[in-house]
Length: 300
Image 1 (tube, rainbow, N blue to C red):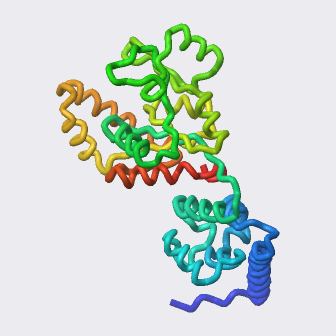
Image 2: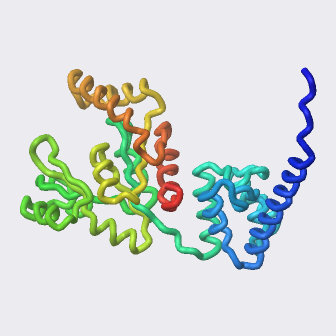
Image 3: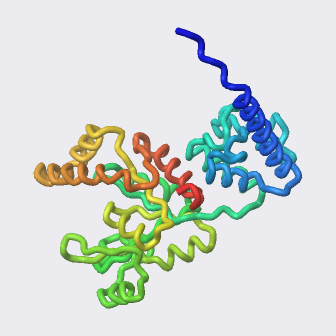
């Protein structure tokens, strides 16, 4: 094989000038952060918005080292905790690395962390209820949305905790005044819906809010609140989903077959969602969902 011909001198000169310009641009970004003319989390946002920008090509280590009072030892510890390699550039970070780094910097810089409604959905028997229950018990700062229903309460159910139990007339009023993000008739009998005012109030107060719902409900929420973050909970494998469904022993063989066919259709819709979380281990899946409650709108 003959050696590759060297590029023309003019090309080498142009490439050299471009490289010098890029280094100077990155140096200017670092200097702005060091002088507090720019906040580090704002540099992250700029880099993620434009992968060709100086911010995107800046190494994370260089950005952190530019932050006043963050010395090399502290930077190394932070990057280790966030599982970010020294060679990683801002534009090359994965979504969870972005979320954690941004959250760390915003907390450090005293910025307000914006929150969005997180909608958790997935196929039947995937464990949505189990994951949301774990979050309710272990992450009390996250508000789990409570649905409204026209059915009467069952023994042990508490109004405002398990559901908002309302009359048909009250449900009609909520629909008329656009107070429901979504609603549906279940089993051709009672109506269920997601009240919007408590969600809006909690988000405005800076709380993180999560809604566990079925696939159709998630689609309706997206129509009503496009800024909501949709998370799809997946089983480790199809075989595991089958095992979980059959293992519950709560449905007849015919009902199990029907639910499995429904699950196939539901799994095919996963690409409609912003993020996917695999439910292999409930605490881990819950932790990943919780982390996504801090993903900013610019990353969704």
